[in-house]
Length: 398
Image (tube, rainbow, N blue to C red):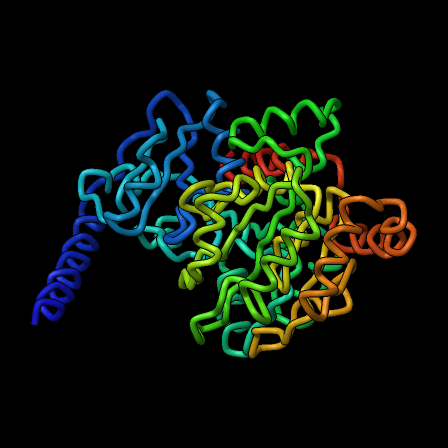
C-alpha cells in the first residue's frame, strides 16, 4: 500500500512539474554566459568523460555549468564537491532548466528534466559505453539509435566506430563526430612527461605503498542473473593464485562492477581487511576509474570495457577465458581481447607473474596487434579530446 501511495504521489508531482515548466517564462541569461546542464548517472554518479568535460567548462568564464541528479539519493554524489547540482524535479530551478542552452548526456535524453527539444535546446551525447564488447538486442539498438539521432552531436572516437553505428545501428552519419573521449586524455596526455613521479603521487593519495599494481576489474552478469562470485572458477583459490603470482611488493586493487551484488567470501573479506597488499576499490570508495587505471601495471578482466581505456597505456592485460555474459552478441568481437588468456587459476598465476616481470616478451607477442587495435578504435591519440568537445560545444551554443 505504501508503494502505491508513493508512486501515485510521484506521478502527481511529475504532472504538476510539467505544468509549471509550461507556464514559467524563460528568464533572461545573466552575464552573457552560456548555460550547460550535465546529467549525473544513478549508480556511477559523476565520473568519466562528463566529469572531465564539466571540470574544464567550470573553469571557463564563458559558461555556467551544473549537474542534474535523478533522485534524492543522488545528492550524496555531490556531498564533498563545490559543484552546482540540482534535483531534476526542483520547482525552484525550472527557470534555469528552461534557459539552458545545451545538455551533456551519457545515457540518451534520460534524466533531462524538461522536454528540451520543445524549447529548442541542444544535446551533446558522450555515451557511457562508447567502446565495449557488449552488443545490444535489436530493440535496444533501435532505442539507442533513436536517442543518438535525436542528439545534436554524438561523440565517437574513430571512423571505425562511426561506421558500425551507421551501418549496423542506422545512426545518421552527420550527427556523429570523431572528437575522442575526454576521459582518455589523462591516459595519453603527452604533457605528463614524468609519469613515474605522477604515478607515485597518485599511489600515495590512495594509500598504496607497493612498487607494482594489479587492477582486477570484471564485468557483471547481464540482466542481474545470478549472484556472481568475485573471482571465477573456485573464487578463493583463484584469488590466492593471484596473490602468489603477484608476490609481496605488488598491490591488488579489486574494482567490482557497480551493479555487482557484493558476493564476497569470508576468506576474501579477511584478505581485504588484513592483507596490506589487497585494496577494495569500489566506485563508492574511488569514483574515477581513470585514477586506478593510471597507476596500474597490469589489468585482469573478463569482458569489461575498461580494457579499451587501459589499452592506451600500453601495459599488459590478462583476460579470464570465461563465457561471455551477453545475451545480445557483440559490438567489439572476442578476437579483440589482445593479451594473456587464462583458462584456469593455475595459468592465471603464471600470467600474473609474467605480466609483472617480462614486458619485452609481452610486447614481442602482442605489440603489433595492440597498435592495430588502438589505431582502429582511437583516431586521435593526442590527449586533446576535451578541447575538441569544448570547441564543439562553443559551435553548438553560438
